[in-house]
Amino acid sequence: MPPLLAFIPLLPLIGFVVLSFFGRQMPKRAVAILGAGTICIAAILTIILGLSFLQTPPAGGAYDQLLWSWFSIGNLSVDIGLRADALTLVFIFIITFVGALIHIYSAFFMWHDDDYARFFASMNLFVCSMLLLVMADNLVLMYLGWEGVGLCSYLLIGFWYEVPSNCRAAIKAFLITRIGDTALLIGLFLLFKELGTLNISAILHLAPDHFTTGGSNIVLITILLLVGGMGKSAQLPLQTWLPDAMAGPSPVSALIHAATMVTAGVYLIARMHVLFQLSPVTMMIVAIIGALTLFVAGCSALAQTDIKRILAYSTISQIGYMFLALGVGAWSAAIFHFFTHAFFKALLFLAAGVIIEALHHEHNIFMMGGLRKRMPVVFVTFLAGAVALSALPLVSAGFFSKDAILWYSWSAANGNPLLWVMAMAGAFITALYTTRLMLVVFWGDVRTPVHEHPAQGMVIPLIVLAFLSITAGFIEWPHNMVHLSLFSDLVQKVLPETVLKPDLPSEWLFQLMAVFVTLAGIYLGYLLYYGKPGIRWQRSPGLSGMRDLLFSGFKFDQLYNFLFVKPFVFITRINKSDVIDRLYNGIAQAALKLNSWFAISQNGSLRLYIVGVLAGILFIITLQILL
Image 1 (cartoon, rainbow, N blue to C red):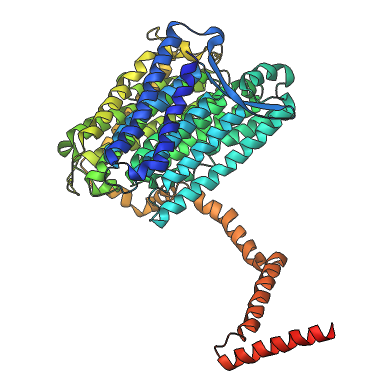
Image 2 (tube, rainbow, N blue to C red):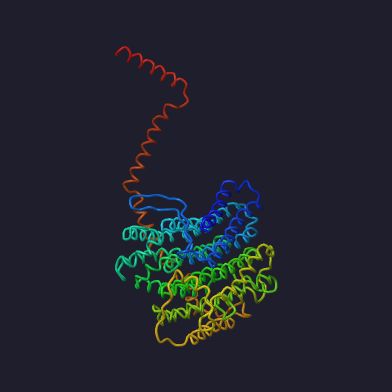
């Protein structure tokens, strides 16, 4: 079975190479078959690998495959090696399976685009990079995949580069994530300095004996790793790039900025959980960042009018839940929410893409309305994603995964009442803005007529994802309801069990409270938005300041512009004529002066040219006589 590992990232890599060199000469149908087909085959291989893992677990709990030695410098030796354990299998299943559905959808969604081959080449490169990130057996190879997905995010956010705002959004994402990437790289240097290796298994084995719990070295290293994860996963305060990343095509938003790349920080912390457990301070910081992010992003989603920006802030908020779970030590709960979130958030983005295309590229939800009867399939599938996002009790996957995080935010050893209150507030806000989104888009009067209906190839992925958004949660029920924990039993082979506080109140009480909060958010959304297209209360002058604050994402962009951008521009303007510039300008001016002198001899006068030739001849003869 290990030889199968290499083919999973190799197939999308082959697709990228072929499409990069020959895509423009290939017919669109061939591009679609190659681009989507390689991902579909990789998904099939992943399912085969997963079934084999479940039926006959490998020795050591993981499949390993060493391909070749990459480089060796001094004490650092890095291999191209792949490793697949239970945690890896969860991620590669989402990357390939959800990625295959999105590629199939993209084949129809992007059909009329002139750069059809470039789109699929970039998407295939992304899948290959993301697979390397989660399958690498060492942190150097993981970092290669980490940078690869960042590159592809930049390429695909600015895919329609003719629009200047798209280019600015791509540059913004690239620069902000560089902050996290730089911190991560420094953390890797420090890890190698301390342990003498960057092999993941070796690090997890050596760290408990090498580091002292709470020591300054391990705290610094884990904080640097955390900053790396915050950048990629758009967590406070590095979250501002993700809403602008919606400038890319909707399939990009679904795959990269909802289901996979933005959860790379979750994978990093979960994979290096042994290090984080040695730093309780960092664990608490992770939990606090997650709690603040889920609340701030949820509030921001309440005021957005662009359908994709609502989902973008929702993604930031839901990843905040994952960070909260990681911070309190609920490792399996965090990964389970990643698992369910990938289905329902990819579904919502793809369905939003269908709506936008059907309504003449309209993004404003208040210019939509009445789509329930005109696009019934999209309505039903979007509703499935919405109930999962809202965590509607017992009938959605989101309920089972989010309920576990709410419970552990109180009951885990690192949990506390304040974190639980923030998580509950986030659940209420999520239900509220999701209800707002559904009612404004699908109920009320028609404001923009439907221009075209989606192709069948776009509908099938929606139906599959809608089914999974409802049913995927049933593999992991709360233990006080039904003893069914297939997901936890698998993941906890890699990640430790969560330690609960002693003498806790009944879990039933907390589950009922979570259900009540969710239903209260849905009911409030119904009261505020059902049958009220004008939404008069939103136009209240007393609420305008709060609305503007939420709409701007708590003005983080303005803050960073004031603190960093303006001072930087001011300094560069002062320094634009420094010594180096003067040197270069002097060389250029000297060249221009010499040119003006020599240009005198090229004035077009034949008599002057003859005089010059004669003068030259006389000069040469004179030299010969004298010498």
